[in-house]
Image (cartoon, rainbow, N blue to C red; front, side, top):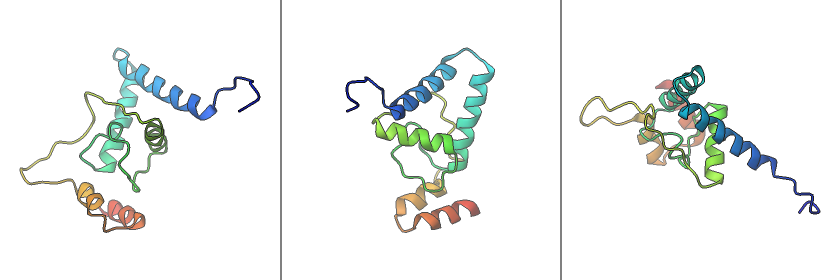
Length: 124
């Protein structure tokens, strides 16, 4: 590939570094880094509005997802066929028996374009 120079692909190094950093912070004792990362994950989960954990089911297409870091991380997880399973995902529980997550219904319907899904998300 590179004339035997043994260069590592930079994309792979970036993916590995991101995942290692996340695992390091999540597994550390209660620290400021862990708290900030958990807040970021919970906020991303809240804003995307779906019933499945973002980092565990990273193959779900989310055109309305706006977090650049987590969007890139999800793409990387799909590329390496991996997922991150967390005990506390930040998925909000359903309030009533027949409630549904609006964005789950919209995404499952396959009736909307990416632009329409973004507009619907901005109105919810």
